[in-house]
Length: 416
Ligand code: FHN
Image (cartoon, rainbow, N blue to C red; front, side, top):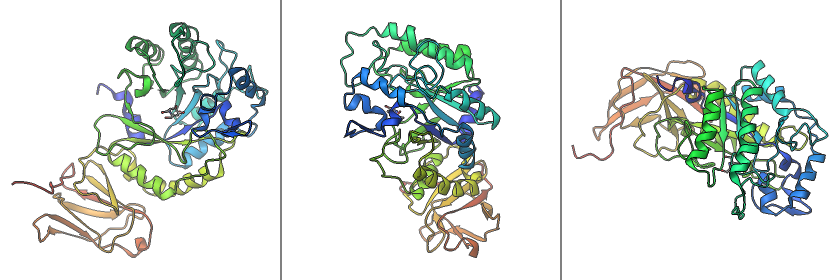
């Protein structure tokens, strides 16, 4: 297959995004002002002058940052890859960059190469590591772009040559195998400029996957808008970056955490439509993970780990014709998974024509008796007799093995 190097990504389905930088230590507040927007944008949004902002580096000392703990947690949460902010729009490198002293080793009392620690922990535990890199925006470099600002007098080419391209080379030569280069906010980058970034990645690590936000349609897969799930199944690899509250880096004022059930629902919806869910944490200034994030991801993990076969290595399938509240479907060859999100009074599905071979509860492997017939409206109709073990359960998954390779749904409206 032409894009065989992407297979692991398409199968992975669920990843951990980590936003960590100097912005983290503000917790979304600076000199008594709370930013109204994402905390990692605080410099831009509340106009912190650069000479003030760089002083944050002197306070950056996340002594509780524990790369191995994060990787092990991600594994326990069922996640299959990590994407870490090597450099966000603020311009600060979370690794020991030789081409800019504005980095975690040279500019902070912490002096540890956070990315190196994460790389080693990921290698030890076989966790693919992706790097977020803000390729166009850089609020520290005089020629880096900034959204909401006049960039007219800047020499973007100079920034590309002086910082962006050399840093990409560092990241791709000094930190082992990089699974994904996760670019973000192309702004006015030309096709040629995006192409130059792509070429560096592919020259140094041909199997490194590039996300769609490189811009100019030069990525290897589509990155959707933040937190936006496509309505329909989408062919080709895609991924949605998403938050657990309303910000990416930690923000004290944002305690609007999502319910684990909502995350489970979104995960299944995304997977059923053929995508990956890249779910974010923003560590505290001391480097530890906020308890609410841990609580949510622990709760989601119970579902993910018990029903892993219905989530991972699944494949794109046609849209089910009804908007179902109580279940969502995922599929593999010859298998349809009915991910039950709210136990219905009667477990039945219409508009489905496949022939059932057997049905079982995924987490217990119990066989489930079924009836397969035509409904009184002459539609394909399945009904299942649920075992006592799932009665009263919030979520569970039923696997239906079918004679046919793919699900066959009937259209609701047809002239035939
Ligand atoms: O501006 C960034 C934002 O801070 C965050 O990193 C997200 C993650 O997808 N990307 C940009 C906005 O889309």
